[in-house]
Image 1 (spheres, rainbow, N blue to C red):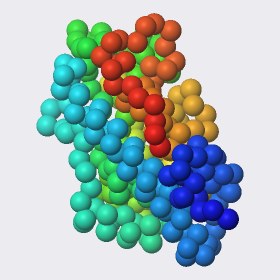
Image 2: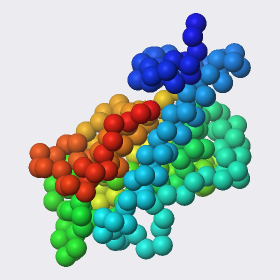
Image 3: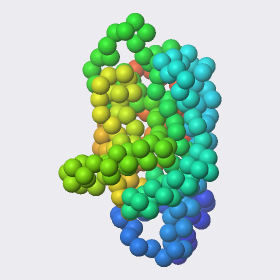
Length: 247
């Protein structure tokens, strides 16, 4: 059988991920098979990272405000990648896509006010309605290994929380409300998880969406996938950030 990785780099990207999702929990795997899946995930996230970099570099030109001192992008270093290894062992396994996302993309924070995208409340007016939609554009936010470490250590230090939870609920990112400056919840992933591509829970308008699918939607909408659910014309500045995902 041709490896998943070879098929992926030859252009069968969506088909490969669809097959990996159809497998469900991967369970114990031959080392060669496990490396094949990991190679697909790494290549996927390396390609996604190039899009994240491209969008992050464009953000200052969009009249961004509301994020003092917080960089939109910070690449993982060797220490952070080693931390991912430690966390995977302690938690009992990370989905291949999540592990690769932590290693290859890391901290990403596109939340803020953007005058060129008509995002934000410059006069303090409350955001009306609820997500999904352009009023809640869901700017891309991704965690780093330090975030996962912090949440894992909090959970393991609390016996009552360990007893109550079915698995470890990782707050992967703020939800659409929080990203818009309104009290809300989170996009979450339940760990441990042996699936290649985990379900990202709590994403408005996208029930059952997986991490790779969410990243594709984010890139397709220039880092602000909530715009997919809007009826009004897309701002020219956002149209310039959009791209067909190549991962």
